[in-house]
Amino acid sequence: MKPAWDQLMKEFDGHASVLIADVDCTTEGKSLCDESGVQGFPTIKYGDPNDMQDYKGGRDADALSKFAKENLGPSCGPEHLDLCAADKKKQIDEFLALPILDLEGMINKKEYESAKVDKDLDELLKSLQAQYEAGTKAKDTKKEEIKESGLGLMKSVQAYRKRNKTTNAATGSGTTNNNHDKTTNAVTGWMGGWLAGFLPSWVKNEL
Image (cartoon, rainbow, N blue to C red; front, side):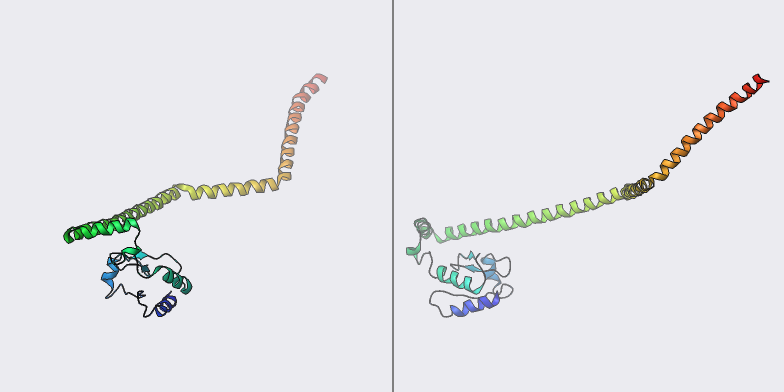
């Protein structure tokens, strides 16, 4: 983005009512960045120096130049009431009528509210991070318990039994022959028993 930004600064260099500038938020520009609510880098803001707005457009040279030409310059404020919508002009008139101490008190209150919003979000993120870490630890512990309870061995036994079943199915003809042999043996045994019981009686009667 830096080449595009440098080109934009060169384009508006010396402009009567528009200033394009770099601010180093880590050194002498830190206080300005804090006042403007800068939280990440690079950040682009525009508008009244006392009421900077977040820029959300493109960051190439053409997009930046187009936005600057269409949006930068004099804007609504105490010095340019003619540029204000009716509701904004009414607000400015009300603020101008306030004692300066009251105005400063209102500013401090609003800045406190803004800072509190940021703080609340930070605390929420920390809480969520802590919950995430605790949840991850609990998950890992539970998975280890499940693993140690024999899940791996169960899967090994399952695979072993499936392999053996497949092997037996592939050699099914041999199993059929074995069954045939068992049947033959049973018949042979029965015949042997019948003959063994008959012959002696038959022989005895003949004698």
